[in-house]
Each structure stands twice: as C-alpha cells, then as structure tokens.
Amino acid sequence: MCVSFGHQGQLVGTLNLPDRQDPALAPALAFVLLNAGVIPRMGPHRFNVKLARHLAGQGIPSLRFDLSGRGDSPAQAGAEPGASPTRAVADLQAAMDHLCATTGIRHFVIAGICSGAFAGFAAARHDPRIMGLWMLDGHVYPTWRGKLARVSRQLRADLPGTLRNWARRPWQGHKPQTPQAGPAMGVLAMQARQGGFEPTRTQFAQAMQALVDRGVQVYMMFSADVLWRYSYQGQFRDTFAGHGFVSKVVCEHMPHIDHTLTTLQAQQDVMQRIGQWANTLLARQAEHAQVAPILTPATSTGKAWPTARPLHAPRHVAPARPQG
Amino acid sequence: MISFRFGTSGQQLFGVFHPAQGGAVRMGVLLCNPFGQEAVRIHRFYRVLAERLAANGMPTLRFDYFGTGESDGDDLDGHIERWTQDVLRADEALRKRLPCEQVAWLGARLGGTLALHAAQKAPKPPTRLLLWEPITDGQAYLQSLASAHQLATHDPFFPRRATATAAVPAPPHMAMEALGFALSTTLVQQLTRLIPAQAPSLAAQAITVIAPLASPGSPGTQMHQPAQLSQLPHAQVAPLDWTSEEAINTALVPSQALNQIARHLEDEVAA
Image (cartoon, rainbow over all chains, first blue to last red; front, side, top):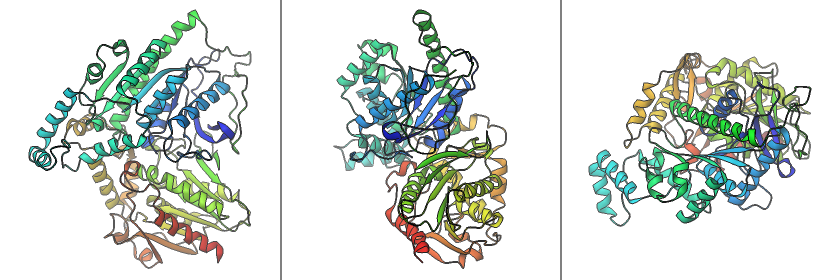
C-alpha cells in the first residue's frame, strides 16, 4: 500500500500489512525499515521488500519509507544537502506517527543498514515508542585486538602486497592492494560521509545503556565489509567490557555476509535471524500485555485494517481512530 | 509527484507519475527500468530526469516491473515476456493521464530491449524511442552479470563467503543469481535467445540509440548491436557504472548523461 505522511505529506512509503489472523487485536509492534545510504526504500537488492514480506508472513506489519531527499521523498525546503541526523529522526518520528494513526500500533522496531542504523540509533535515544533496534554495520569502535585480527588476515591474504604497502606508507597503516579491497574501503568512505552521526565511544556507551535500561531490545550485526573496524566475534564485548548493557545486547560478527547482502543466501540468513528475533520481541510484548494492555481491541465489524485508499496526491494524514 | 499502484489485485505494478508543471503538454514520457541492481543504480537518475522533464512540460511516468522494486511479485516471477506486457500497461496508465497522444519511451539496458519488444505490440507505438545501451546479446549480458556477481561477492579475506553461497540449495526455477537478484530459468532462457542477428522490427517513428562514449562496448550492447540498431542515429554519453553499489566513486546522477538525454526529449517537444 502506497502511503504518504509527514509535513505536507512529503514522505513516501510502502505499508506492508499481514493477512489478519486474529481480527480481535492489532499486532503488538511494527517494523520501520530505513534507507541504506542513497538506496531507495526497496533496500539494497530489494532486501527491504523481501524482509517486509517475510515479517508479514509472521503477522508483523512494516513500513518502509524514503527519508527526506532519498528515493521518492523530496528534500525538505531549505534543508542542507546530504545526510542530516536531525532530519532523519524527525522523519522517523513522522513514520511512527503515521503507523500509530493508521494501525493503532504504538511500539516500533527500527531496522537499518549503515546510515539507516545510525538514524535508528539516534531516533531510539529520543523516542520511547522505539522498543527494538536492528542495526547492520552501525556504529563500531575498533580495538587493538581487532586491528591485530585484521592485520593477520591481510598478511594471510596477500603477504607481498601488504608488505609493499606498509613499506610505502608506514605511518598510515595497512591497506592491501588487492582489488577486492574496493567494497570494504567504499563502505568506510560512505560511513565517513555520514558526518555527525558518529558518537564517541563514551557517548555511545551512555546512550546504549540508557536504551537498555529503558528496555529497548538491540540486535547488531557486523559484516565482512567493515573488517577495518569490526574484525572478530566478541569485539563489541571487549570494547564495552564493564558496561552493564553488554550482556543484554545481541551482537553478531557475520563475515559470511557483505554490507548490502549481495547474495541470496546472505539475504535469507539475515531475514531468518531477524524473523526469529522479532518473534522473541512479540513474546515479550505478550508478557507485558498481561500486566499492562497495549493493544487496541477491534470493533464489532471485525475489520482489521483501514481501507486501502489509492494515493492520488501528497496530503497530510489526519490522525484517525483505528478500525477493526 | 504521485505514487500509485495499477493492475489487478495481487499483480499490481508500482508507478510514480510526475505531472507537468504549467504550460501546454505536448508529450508524455515513460521511463523503462533496467534489470536488477542496474535498476537500483538508475533510480535516482530517473527521478531527477523525470522531475526535469515534468518541469519542462512533459508528464513522466516511471514504474517497476512485476517482481521488481515496489511492485508485487518476487524475483523469480519476472521474465521478458511478462515485463514487455508491463511496459504496455505502464504506457496505458501514462496515456490515461495525458491530454495529448505523443509519448516517448526511454529504456535503459534491458529496459531498452523491453521497450523495443513492447513497441511492436503497442496499440499506439511510442512516437519517440530512446534506447540507452540496450541489451541485444543475451548470452554476453548473462556473462557480464555473472562476472560482476563474482567480483562483488569474492573476498580474499573471507573465502568462506563464496563457498557458503554454493552450499545453499537454490530455490526451484532459479537458474542463477546476480548481484542480489535471482533469475528464473524462464528469464535466462529468454535472454539466451536474444542474439544480435535478430532484432524486432522498429515500430517507433524516431529512434535514437544512446551509447557510451569512447568505450569498446560493454558486453551485450554496442559491439553486438543488430544491424538495424547500428544504422540508427546515435548519441553518446559518458559510460555509467551500471552495477555500482550506491555509485561508489562515481556520480549518482551524471550530469552529462542527464543533460544529453533530457535535451533529446526537450528538442522533440520544441520542434
């Protein structure tokens, strides 16, 4: 379903609603899927579309949309060019407002890759409606052990080339000359362009602790393409050893996948992991609902969702009483 | 800009219509996507082009084929014959929104191939057809996709990645995967039958082939063009890295290509 929302209806998105299995209750949560860099809302290799349908198969609605200036959403008038953390957070909140208004759902999981992960993390810090975060190649903080792991891989992959590179630039470190280094370095370049999204290690730790204390469920993945900064399983634990949130955040090093999930196997693997994690979130929400109901019961009509209306022109969506 | 879905339930296509901004409308424009990752790559370019054309009085429709982008369907649902019909449906959807009869089609890469096929079957063929590096040699194109996929997925630091892919059984009816998209056996068979010696008859009044500047010819395109296309007027633009992820190390919307293509259409209207 095509949707538009936000200021003057400028933000363009696609709402995926599952076939209603139980018309009595709306789902406990919905996913919001973000742009990865400049890739439109369909996601890299259409991953967001595939993930949305996978989640719908589990009864979980989702909204994927284009942030201002990305995909089909125009840039805000007078906005600075390039990524804006403040703008992204505002857009995300508009997305959640829209979902709440049209479905009655009040709890959201933000799923993002790279800049999408940054935006989700920033929004979660400001919006208590966000109860889950999935981040692929989000904020990452190298460790000495990680650097050793990376150097070891470089030497094993290309000993002569690596040594030659070190001899030429001993003060810059260890960049191999293999052509396959291109994608990894490109990811780092993209992340560097985000500028303004990157909290310091201390700021990140404080923010993450606050999220965990609030009950936000965090699931982080790091691909092979951020090898230069995330190099081994356990790096997150080592980086933030001593912080209470470490044991409560799921963090996986996944060297068999790349930054944009280029293989179908990587897409399938990640979708299944997210789906399983989403089920645990639903279970948690169900437990909480027994204590404090959060769901909006259906009306006697039994209709679960608002009628899909064709989108003819951008317009402001007024808050509506949930149907069904 | 108006997003909408058209077609029958469960098989709907997604489209974005850019209405003309003021002035008399003399021609509408339909933008036909390339395949797979190339469609992701060209998305921003098409949007900027559509906005420019609409600002110059040419309503423009860009859309996703079945099984691609924001349209219904999965990777394995798409193939040439189906997508050719999608071009015709999109043309119909565009014409419903036009006060004129003149329509131009721009097809990039496989989109150019589909536009050629669709033009033969169209009740009202386009009056202008721009073919941007159309695919005319399917075998060469498949090989280029396979090479690009191998380059994108091989990593000397993590050789397990390539083997991990091979260890997972492929879904039924899948012949290959390329840069994040599955190709059905039907699609591969149809591409295999695309050979330069055969080309559909040219059913548009004016056709221009847009080729890359100073390039020996990327596989499946210029070097292997059928004679009919080789003899057509050509325009040249700087080569585009069709499969680049997020246009790393290159312009997302190359201005030279944008200006060249837009001028071809704007000159048509001005004539």
